[in-house]
Every structure is written in structure tokens, then in C-alpha cells.
Image: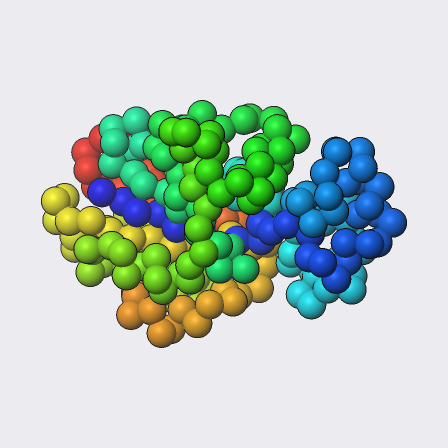
Length: 224
């Protein structure tokens, strides 16, 4: 089983300190929500976001959207060998049911995330997405697997085909991929007791890394 975590993801609702900005209030009225209930989006809220710390990397829910679609569409997920989680900069944990059918259109995905951040469970009765408080470390502590890998430019260089070669097929593996556009993890990854791995000499986007990791694990399991 592969446990995939999209970590330090730049997925959050609008912070209170910019909730009264005219750009935010206009967009909230348009959506029929309170300003602090809408998802922060750098393509729409950049003018207001410039007052936030780390504004250059925040407001990127599209990265989570692309990563989740890539993971959930994979043969690995179809075979029941993938579990996906999202950890956000605000230490929120989203547990993703492998059977969830996420919207392909970004606007609908954004609306789904707003509902999730508001209610904590989507749908309410038989949830396929669950939002809880929790750090990356607390999430890792829930897994039995001793094999933890962080994909990072700071890691030891490996070919993607070598990442899983020393693991038995029966063993669970946890892989952490950064859910942010650039820069480094906000979490102190060196303290996670995980192997740090780099698969390319240049920075790669999160969806690209997710795709390569899943394909390598599929090949390890003999699916592809």
C-alpha cells in the first residue's frame, strides 16, 4: 500500500486579516459566502494577499486539485493500493476516500473545498472527504509503516525506478510530496525520521512528482 501525503499544501480559506479587502468582499458576495469562508486563490486575490506573510507561495488550491486528480485516476488507486491525504500550511488534514469522484472543473472543486472547510465532512452523512486538525507528524504517527520518504530537492539523488526497489511488496510505504509552487517545506522534514529523496536535478511541479511516484510504485507492484 502506498500512502501519499500532499504536505504543506497551499490550500486555505481567506485569513481574517485580509477579509475586509475590497477584492475579497466582492468575490465573497459574488459566491454568496462570508469572506473567511472562501478559498484563498492567488489568481483572484493577489492584490489583497500582498499583505500576507509568504504571499508569493500562498493561495494555490489548484496544485492540490491537480495532484488529487492524478492520484485518484491512477491504476494504483483502481487496484485499491493507494491512500491519499492532504496536509495544509494551517495544519489541517484532509483524508480522501479512494472512491471519491472529484470535480474536473476547478470552479466546482473550489466550491467543494469551501464546503469541506465549513462543515468538515463532505457529504455529511457518508463522508468521502474529512477535514481535521493535525500536523504532518501526527498524521505520520497514524501509519504502521516504517518506510517514509520525502520528495525534496535537498534529498539524495535517485532514479525514480530505484525509490522502491528495496521494499517488499507486502510493506506499506509513505511518500510525502510538497503541495506548494516553490520554495521549501514549512514543516521541518529533517525531524520526521524519513528518507529524503530527489529524482531530478531541477525543481519539478507537485503533480509531476506525484505522477512519477505512483507510476514507480505501480511498476513495483506489477500493475504496469
